[in-house]
Length: 412
Image (cartoon, rainbow, N blue to C red; front, side, top):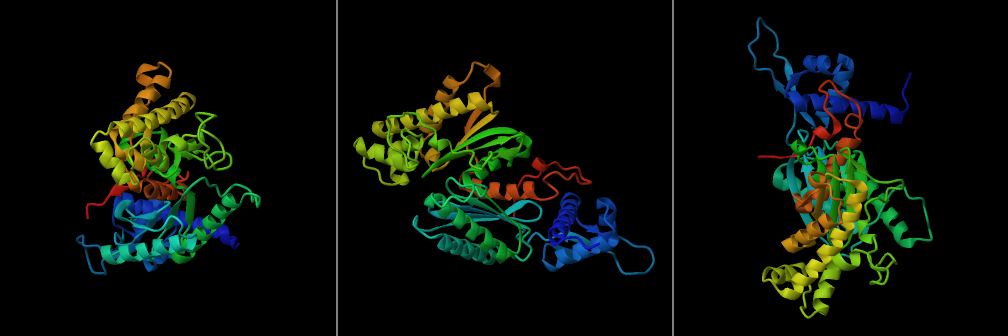
């Protein structure tokens, strides 16, 4: 019986994942060894490996072990480290960051390119494709064997929200997401996973270091906007409609400044990049850029330090309330604002600790993000792994759990 096209593609992708997982865990193997280890027939395995060879995902080397008698040496299949197997793409307001990981889950390339904040979705996609081409030339990578593309999308967004023509901003975001998904799927002929870029950065902070074992993490990113993510049981929580993590629009003061969301006193009106720059300028220290803000904070300017403390206190109040409700084991603060000065994280940590229940050693660890600007793109790749047929729940012969396959830095 012929399987439906969609089911056949799913089964083939599962078989491919199993082959790649075995090669990743055990190194070069003959087809016979692969067939035994993953339990596929030689016919099915031959079909799968032939497709992977054509796409450049795997390569062939001769078995150099001593052999008795005559005959050709057995061909051994191995992962092709030059192939850009997975792409993580993080579209920010003013730049796109791309991270490339090979089939062995090593990060082999990472770079970003800027664009105007008013650039169209088409212009942003074009900038991303140009960056991919440049990375291929500079790093000697080829992208014929891409197995998946993860895309971090900026701002409040969920592809699961129903069509609402009365909300033009939300509709424009959905149209942009559809354009991105289609463009990357057609360019690389690979599955595309798309989610909010800040949530993906939280996923990366939780799963980057497998040894840390962070199953419950609360993440907050302070940037042009403020968003966050919640990881529970090693999985990203997206919510009923896919809009979880919009912590920047939690109101702290009903009489405060009006936020772009329409409410007053949201965290974003106090601790976002524009809010902090504006408050410093209004207080008598005219800073127009993050670099100027960083310089002023570095000299210990009392006005700038005071504004940063106020922002940190507001962040801590929000994080404290969330921590009481969600009980994370770790709280991570990231984004450009968090890098300006230690004042923000220190004040946020102190305020959060004050807001928490007196649980002593069970209090969450509070730290700054370790992945910096790469977090969203790395999280997008991790989302690919967690959404693949194998890693989303299928237990292979190697018995690797979904969260046990983190990315690594390549030494090359």
